[in-house]
Image (cartoon, helix red, strand yellow):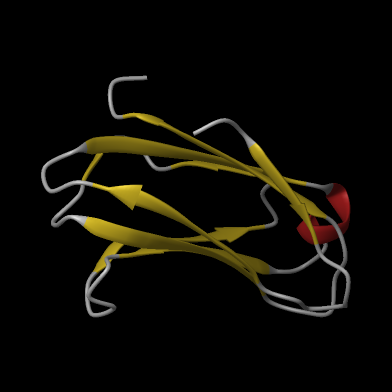
Amino acid sequence: MPADALTTTEAGQYIQLTFLGSADQEVSLATQWSTGISQSVYQTILITAPDGQRTVYSSAQVYAGSNNSGTLSLPQDGTYTIQFLPDGPVFGSVTFTLGDGGS
């Protein structure tokens, strides 16, 4: 997956995108966000499995501008959801880069 840059259009807006994955596939997610979003106290990043029940990755950042998940092993085939949830009415852009687990 190439880098996807998404920009909020309303204060406090959540950002979400999806990707297809396979059971036992190893991936990593690098996330960077703009200064405007860094003004929020917390930024939560979630990856949810296709069944909607399992959280594959969860991270809460404090005033950071980037995050790297490290290597993640996907539990099942299907469409995964990535969510970026800022804590507060902020504007800005977020860039997601999904790569192979070893990269």
